[in-house]
Image 1: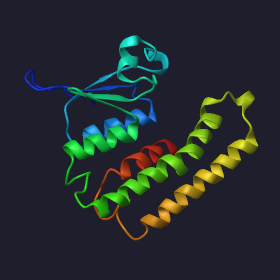
Image 2: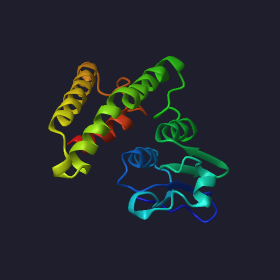
Image 3: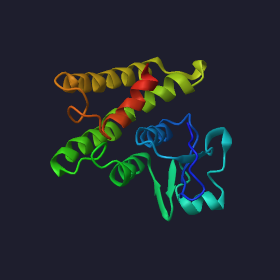
Length: 182
């Protein structure tokens, strides 16, 4: 849900289409923190990623991009960390570097281990026309993705959330992939 700030408050602006998993991470974070924001549809069928005004914000022409006053942040996990550090200290962002490192390592794991296999499976199974699907590649990425989720499940066996007993920024990246998985 996009929220509207009062006329005297700066508005957080998030560029990106809601069907993007990476945009969903940013939106979930904004909503979790109860922040007012405006979301602007770009990317996919909306286009606009190659417009000069957008490229001035994000030179890579990808989504999402967050603007908070004079601060511009792109890349979903960078946005998540920025929002958590700026607006979620004590909620999504732990002041203790050791505890925050646990969240950081699981966010890095999601990006470097889970996400590559998961997104390849998604593209090969969901986005690929049936006539072009490669069952062996689909099965390879399915097994790898299941293996990642099994590792996460073993980790969660002794605690409520990824980084411990409290919900943190670590839960959002993995959570968006699980939402799509189911």
